Length: 374
Image (cartoon, rainbow, N blue to C red; front, side, top):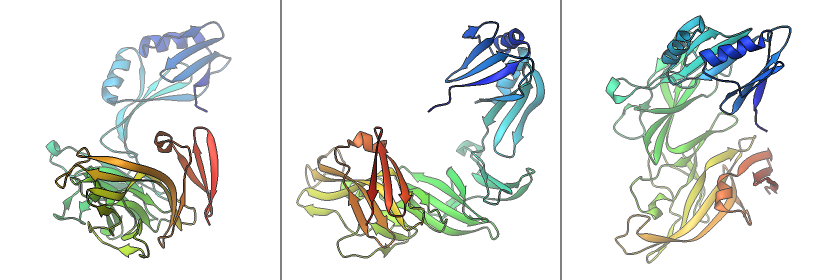
């Protein structure tokens, strides 16, 4: 289901319709003595004639809060609160609408989505900036009153040179006193930095991508680092939990610890110009609720180079692509399920969830399948 519209009661229906047409430049798509339908993109607002006004706030996303505020006030909107920076990471203005309506104009303004701490007593957000501004992206922690408690600038430390993060992709709370930030490195590598707020020190520093925190918040799964400019056989993907590679592994090998951008265990087999067993994971991975297993979709193919000098994917041919859903334990045990009859396009839309620690639910194309992990 998808939300399509909301109803609001108004005492003076036609006055409300005229206000939206004059101030917001939105003409009704339907109007009679009982109701007025206003269309705001995919969401409709229905004004119903009534004996009293609903107390409702209608919020609008804005790319420029100040400019939109000036526009609508010039067209007759009455100010409740002028544009202000809010501690949760927005710039917001409030206006008086018709009847009991409040109109909110909100812009995510240089600060990215705020995160509430597990204890619900602090807020973390990050400020991004461009190179031209000669500043460094910063993570800021506030109390619920909006007072700054602490701040830090994540630093690339796993790979030399050690320097401040130039771009933050996302942040998250890890426990009650730790915040993580994912810093962009290049198209095939990011860096996950976890900071203890009481000391300001990094307690975990990982390179790779698709960082996924376990439900118990004690471990971080990720796709390990691969070189950006490299032939396909050198970019075979592998799964790590913190600093340990758990999948895929050569037959008989146990999980192996590797810190930083070290090469993973060799699983791609070469036979002349043919490279067999190149792994590519679909973007999402899924922890079981007990934090003991991970599920992912793994696509494996072979690549035949045109010559011994071939270095790019286009200078060769892909063969024998096979796909499977894999449940991997922390000990490296992998259980494979073949999604028979499912196209790769449908696999990219696949919804995966753990029913319990031993059962996976897969949903695609309106069909749901339950798999049992031995």
